[in-house]
Structures are given as structure tokens and as C-alpha cells.
Image 1 (spheres, one colour):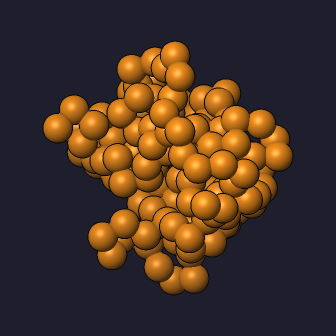
Image 2 (spheres, rainbow, N blue to C red; image 1 turned 90 degrees about the vertical axis):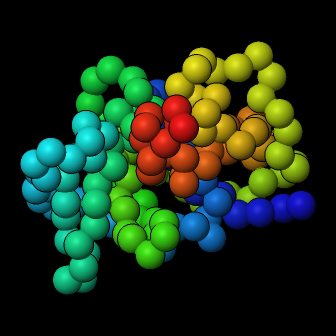
Length: 143
């Protein structure tokens, strides 16, 4: 089944999320830290007078370092809350050219917990990730 996906760059890897889960793509302005928030929460920002929790995707995966702040961030809604994903880059919206298939070989422990599988696109194979698991960070991944 063909589906629209948004291609992202996270920690040097091309990944995708379903386009239907993306509310918009914004340029992040100021990010305000949140005391005592989990390490993968970069802080809060605003979009049209709404607060967004900014998730550092690299840290949410349990990887070292901070995400290189790209020019744009996808905004998603999970359980009624808005999140901006801090990613290295937002590439494009493309159509899948295959069904989801299992990940052959693996990408490492941090990726296997958020991976839904691989999809073919006109840009080659792409890892489809589960944003609900990503938003929860390593705490949700371990549960």
C-alpha cells in the first residue's frame, strides 16, 4: 500500500514518519529549557500561541551528543500534546513504493525499539519509525 511519508535525517540516518502524523513543519525559534525534564526534552517553544515540547531525537534514542539543529522541525500530536522534533534535517514528503518489511541486519539497539520496518522510496530504502515510541524517549522504549 502506498503511503505518504516525511523523510528526516536523525543522527546521520535517513528515517521516515507517516505524513498523516505531521501537523506542520516549522522553523524553531527560541527553545526554553524545562527544569527537571528528561534529558531528551530540549525545552519548550511556541507555534501560533501554542506551547510545544521540543524533543531532541538523538537523545530520545539514547545516543550521545545533541542533535544538530536543522532549519525545520516537524510538529506532531501525540495523545493531545504537541511536540516539535529536533532533527538534523527535514528532507521531503515522498510516497512509499513498497509495504513495510522487517529490518534486515539491524541498525543497533537504539533504533530497533523505534523501528516499524523498512520501506522503499524513490530515494532508496528508508527506516520507518514509530513516533509514539520516540516521543517517550528511552524510558518508554525500555518499558
